[in-house]
Amino acid sequence: MSIAPQLRNLNIDLPACPSTLVKLSLLMADENCSTDQLAALIETDMALSSAVVRTVNSALFGLLKRVETVHDGIRYLGMAQVAGLTYEIGLRGAFPPSPLLQSIWDRAGVRGLAMGRIARQLDVDPWQAHTAGLFAESGRAVLYAYDRQRYASLEADQGDQGDESLLCAAEIEAFGVSHSQLGAALCQSWGLSREISDSVRARPNSASQWTQERPAVQKLLTIGAAVDNLLLNPTRSADPAAVWAELEPVSHQVGLHFQAFQLATMRVCERLNIPQSEG
Image 1 (tube, rainbow, N blue to C red):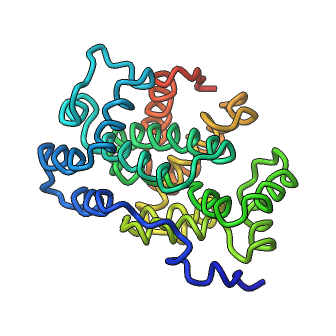
Image 2: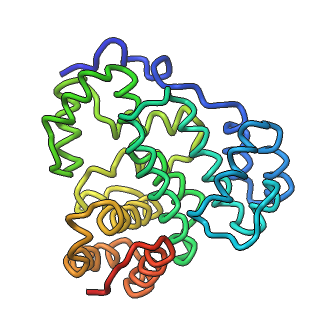
């Protein structure tokens, strides 16, 4: 089925990236980026800056001392995590508030935070991991905005199967494009790296298909799979041993040390107050 006419030119239908986030993406791509530069950029947008400080002070991070400035937030959480939070707030703000979207943003926040923290322990770029997790389902928000009633009906028909590939197939049949394709296009239009957009595009594929991706993308996909299965899927997280049995050969395939990967994930789960077992 061909892409719906309104979606042929994705640049028209995708929400524009706020100028602060365009500059942020360029800054994070600079290896010489400093804490002062990042804080100064975020603080040029008063509403965004206030939202970042408010989020850093939330119970999710459990800081013992209240943060008063973006600079303080970076000092406690690190540049990658604060940059990821800034993108999360900007992404939420690009779409009209809706109960239908709240579950997407809730998952995105947990996924991005968890992926960034796991990546940091595995010598994988934490900024890329956090952002890849944040944008993983962003294409679904685009489809909601495009035709909320029809997409809500499609989701209801899919039920709780939790199979991204089946959902993408249903989206292509209904709209001529999948949320993974739209999410990748959104990443590109917002100036994010190719690794991030490729991981969003390839996320619904099976692990056997990940070998077609570049090594950095394969690692992002594997970390994302661990987070999705162990933190965001109640059915799979009830049997972590089975999840790890599937992830062990994949981790070897993509060049992640399995024990380090497993330990990092378990540490992050514990930090986020979500119990896990080694199985």
